Image (cartoon, rainbow, N blue to C red; front, side, top):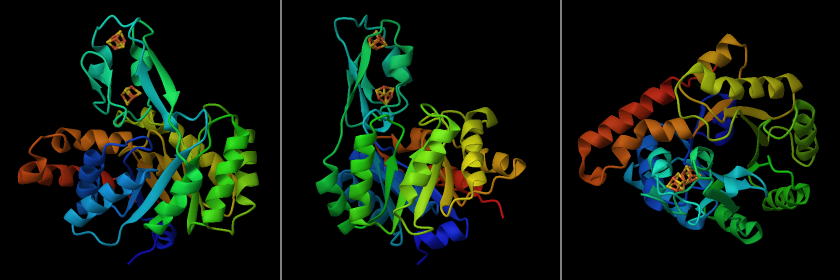
Length: 319
Ligand code: SF4
Ligand code: SF4
């Protein structure tokens, strides 16, 4: 069995991001089934015991027994713990939000399923009546993380794009106390400049041994709705900043990643240890895994697995 460190060292680390805010157990089960069948070994999950259980069920159905689980945790102000909410008094029932939600989290015209909402903010941006707001749904980090690690989670990943430094420090302290084999720090430049990004990371990794931390260079979080170079440009640019800092960490790319990411990395002489794909990886298999008869539909399963395989093979690392 290849450990997560082996996968990183060998640059064979491909992580399927099921969605930090995705609390929909059935969708997680199907995603893990499809991508495990396609050869993916690492899965990124919302920090909820029932989601880890759903992922394991998907793995079992796929007969995949050597998978690794990464748990995503957000800090206050970070979109990864955000959920959308409709202000019904403003809503004109145009149906736009339900049509464009990438996770099918809105039942027409305007009812949001909190468990499916991943906090991407697309509906809020496109609503013509300013009828959508967001709220934060945090977890009891202190109690949930030890339980998840005990149940097999190997990587704890902290998304640190919020401004609440106290929350950041508290959660990072808990993560290091739980002492996962690997911790991961996910960061982008939406709120901070390059200097702040590097100073946050440098400070945080002081408490960890060399090469027990992954820095996930996020381009634009949850933005991978298209499979082109432009969509993945920021992820590659962010990876370059981390690579140039020469820190004793593993580097992975995410946030707008797609089948073009590794090619663009190669062209730019960026050599990450791995890649995490969320929005695009989910979108590309969505038409199969959302079928009602998915579990009895061998053709849909095969098509989904083939699609996933193609995405994984396009993500082979730079050597
Ligand atoms: S897009 Fe806005 S106005 Fe239209 S249905 Fe959704 S919440 Fe209502
Ligand atoms: S568009 Fe994004 S933020 Fe809005 S309901 Fe769907 S998943 Fe949630």
